[in-house]
Length: 258
Image (cartoon, rainbow, N blue to C red; front, side):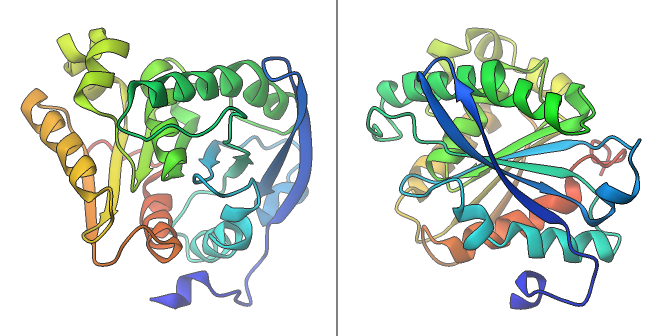
């Protein structure tokens, strides 16, 4: 199973260290951006964008250095299993603590991140990289806190995202009912708008019960989603595996039908 994360003799994408000014946080924020190997050879070609958010104690570098997103994606693209895409790795920490994920104050922090994403990160990326700027060409996912931020950001911006994945993360029933009443009352909204809603969790993860409670809510509402349960806990080993399972599903014309 480790093979997909290893650096192989395939064309390698580039990871660029950059940053942007955050008006909301009144500071300069770091950003890592992966561009596929072919990016420099096709100066006119535009690419779909995958926003990949760090976990609670991580930095913007963790998906690159620990999650090995570049090696995984290089290998999947070379095998024809994933679409060439740009991956944007922001710093998910919102500078005022990290509330427990089941609390409503976590929803406020997720909302702060969603605002940062749409008002600062996305405009910067779309100005400086050759991106396809429509909802069908944008995906978002994250591990732990980043997964909660991803679910929230996608639900809050269905006009901007069609693909979302959560690695060891969830939203509570209360969060969805209070923050997204339109989804709670008309769950078909998600089925109509999202091409992919994907969850992964390890069966000994300390958030396992919270994640499966989120699944029960989706089941009750008749919301379509895919899930992957593994052994193990709240680990980067699992996060890497979930990433490698999700990437081949993104930006595929047939994802909704499979």
